[in-house]
Image (cartoon, rainbow, N blue to C red):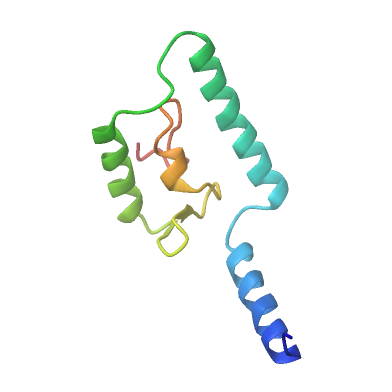
Length: 98
């Protein structure tokens, strides 16, 4: 059974984590935008996944960015999980770094 103390600590940690990202509504909009761009590209016959070298360059940019939460591998601007987003050919950095 979880003690009240541990439950309180969990909520404090969750609040700190989610408060640095956009709202859930905005993150959903961002996700749907990325999904739309990727689907449109795929339906047009273009490749969906980025080349390995492109993904590595993108993730390196993220790792050196002050708006990247390295422990969660998420962008603070858009809230996206960058290990996924960097693999999508049509995706772009919200801070225009790639």
